Amino acid sequence: LQAFQEREGHANVPSAHVEDGEKLGSWLQKQRTRYKARGLSEAERKRLSASAMSDEEVERLEALGVAWDVLAEQWERMFGLLQAFQEREGHANVPSAHVEDGEKLGSWLQKQRTRYKARGLSEAECKRRRASALSDGEVERLEAVGVVWDARAEQWERMFGLLQAFQERAGHANVPSGHVEDGEKLGVWLSDQRTRYQLRGLSEAE
View (cartoon, rainbow, N blue to C red):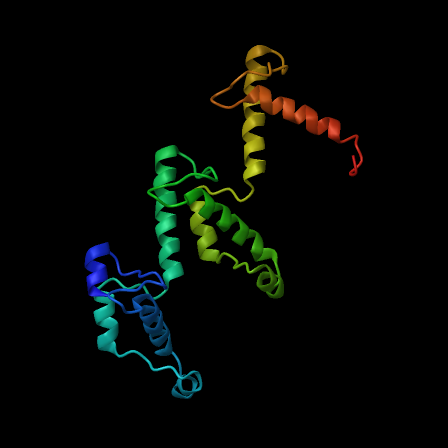
């Protein structure tokens, strides 16, 4: 593990990683299980056949940078990248395909929106969908950097605001199809709204 950490600069060994012929990733997962066993009663440890880690072992592994909760560690890293994006761009509406510092930040943010929706589901429904709901603390931190849960509604409001600006300036709202307003394709958006209006008169089958 020390050799891996010195070479890679971190101690988050992938679960399937083999180092010098040894299953290092699997071993580290067992150490995390042993760390969790520290919080169990002796009877519970016996039932699970789990041996608790000693204080010295904990200290030595933490000194190398071992994270006990890998998911929490990864969440914090992605949130830090989101903060960097927001500070640079002035908003937190990360495009779905955006990559920040080698990480799929856009994809991660979409998952957080899915996890936000899961807050309204029952525990059984969450299990069925394999969805973990965001905690109150995670929601507060994401909202504090300006994350919008319904990105489509937010985009519609932005485009409507641009249409209002166009109308006030031009005296009408007949935006040319190729017109771009403040970097957004306002003409194309308005054409889409007209199409959506026409669809109101069609049946679901049509």
